[in-house]
Image 1 (cartoon, one colour):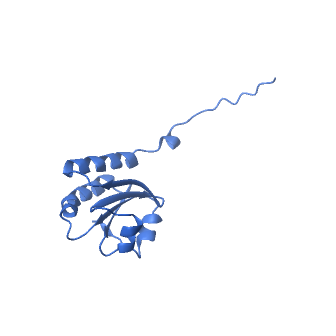
Image 2 (cartoon, rainbow, N blue to C red):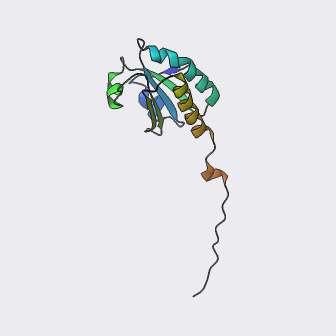
Image 3 (cartoon, rainbow, N blue to C red):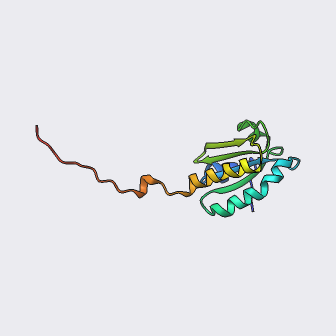
Length: 128
């Protein structure tokens, strides 16, 4: 189930989230928004607790729509620590969207190499 977020809850649920958040801006009248909904639910099931998925009704949350300069619906943002890391809009179809979601999933599901690889520094002292 996708968590519905409003202007009132956006800061807490998205900007202050300890994990990356995939934000789906849509509207009830948007046909493409309804078409991608099953793909988003599948994405959420695959990612588990690594990425939070939220939905925002762009018509009911006009300030957020303006803040993130929405040009078309649906618009998908990946926000990490309050910063937009990726933006998906004007995709050409289901396959294009599915591939973009897979890229996002792979980006955030792999452990960071910065913390998993041990590196030993050569700190030998040399005299002049």
